[in-house]
Amino acid sequence: MAARGLGAVTDPVPFREALGVWLKVGLLSFGGPAGQIATMHRILVEEKRWIGEERFLHALNYCMLLPGPEAQQLATYIGWLLHRTKGGIVAGGLFVLPGFLVMLVLSALYAGYRHLTVVDALFFGVKAAVLAVVVEALLRIARRALKNGFAYALAGASFVALFLFHVPFPLIVLGAAIIGLVASRMAPGLLATNGPGAGGRKAVVDTLIDDNRLTHVEPTATRAIGTLLVWGGIWFAPVILAAAILGGAHVLTAEGIFFSKSAMVTFGGAYAVLAYVAQQAVERYGWLGHGEMLDGLGLAETTPGPLILVLTFVGYLAAYRQPAPFDPMLAGLLGAAMTTWVTFAPSFLWIFLGAPYVERLRGNKAAAAALAAITAAVVGVILNLAVWFALKVLFHEHHDVILGPMRLDLPVPGSIDLAALVLAAAAMVATLRFHVGMLTVLGATALAGLAWRLAF
Image (cartoon, rainbow, N blue to C red; front, side):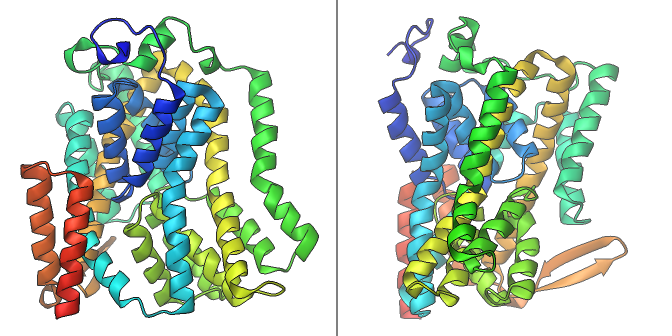
C-alpha cells in the first residue's frame, strides 16, 4: 500500500485493516493511560504511519482536557479521522471491549467465590510487567513531547504539583494552557510544535486532509446539533429504560444516574475519580466496602483497557447484591453493562462533537502553544502515575507524612516485596534493554508470579 512508502498517499487505510489494528490495540492496552498511549503511538505513528506526530499529540492534548479515559478517547479520535463515525465507534469500542469482558469474568468470580488464589498469583506477576510498561511509556512520550528546557520545567512542575501538593488535575491543565498562551506571545518559538516526523514523511491522515479528501473534519452547526441529539440519546437511553421498567429507586437506575454524573467529572482518569466514586459507592450507597474498592482497582490495573473499568467491577457487585427481580448473576451482568455504558458513551459524544473544532484549531498558533504546554505537563502527570503505581507494586505498607501544604505517601522500607522487585527489574531489562514484546513479557512474568506464589 502507498502508505508504507515515501511518496504521496493515494489510497486511504482499508477499513478491514484498521479493524484488525484496533483489535490489536485493545488487546495490548495494558499499563494504564501511559502504556496505552505509548502502544497507540508505536503502532499508529511509527509502524503504520496513519497519523503524524504533531496531529497525534494535538489530539492527545484535547483528550486530556476531557472527562473520562483519555486513551480510549484518543483511539476514538483517530478512528474518526480515518473512517468517520463508524471508525470512531470501532476504535473506541474495541479499546474497551476486551477489558470489559475480562473484568466481567473476574467480577463474577470475585462475587461468587472470593477465593482467587491462582488469579491473584497471576496478577502478582503481571503487575511487575505493567510497571515496566509504564516506565517504558513514560520515556517514549517524554522523548517526543519535551523538546527543550522550558518543556522539561513544565513537566517537572506538573509532577511536583501532583505528587507533593495534590493539586487537582484540571488546575494543572488550566495552568499549563495559560502558560502556553503567555509564552506564545512573549516567546513564540518556546513551545514549537513537532514536524511531520522521521524522514519528513507525511502520514496517511495528514496527506488526505491536505488533499481535501476528509470532508468530515470540517465543523458545521447542523452536524454538531445532530451529534449532540443522537449521542445524548444513546447515552441516556438505558437509564430511561431502567427507570421506566424497574423504577427510579432500583439499583440499575441508581447506577445509571450516578455513573452518568461521574462521567462528567472524571478529569485525570481512574486515579482521580477513585476517591469520589469510593466515597459515594461505599458511604452513600453501600454498594461495596473500602477494601473491595481497592480489590477492583487491582483487577483493573492488570487487565487490558482503561483503568476506569474498575467501575464495571463496582457496577457488577452493586447489582449482584441487590438483584431483585433478577437472578444475582444476571443482575450483576446488567449492572456491569449499565455502568460501563454510561461511563464510555459520553466519550464518543465528546469526540464526535468536539473533534472537528479541535482540528480547525491546529492552525491557530496561540492554541497550538497552549496545547503544547499541556503536552509537557502531561508528561509530569504520567510520571506521577508511574511513581504511584511503583510504590503500590513494590511496597505492602505506606504512611502519610504531612509537611505544611505537602502530603507525601511514603513507603515503609521494611514492607518491600523482594519478589515483585526482582520481577519488575527483570521486566524492565527485557523491555528497555532487549526490546522484548509486551505480550511475551506479560506472559513470562505472570507465569513467574504464579510459580512464586504457589511455591511460597
